[in-house]
Length: 52
Image (tube, rainbow, N blue to C red; front, side, top):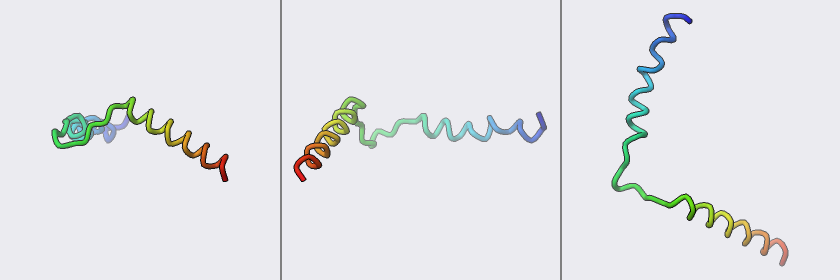
């Protein structure tokens, strides 16, 4: 490995800290809700394609 590759971990430490912090004002959606919405939307598309 060259000496220029040694700074990769240090340069990404700020990003890890940024994405690891949780914002209290952020919208929180349960993953099950996202899956259910996607399935419902897919079913709606199938029904609409069958009727046209």
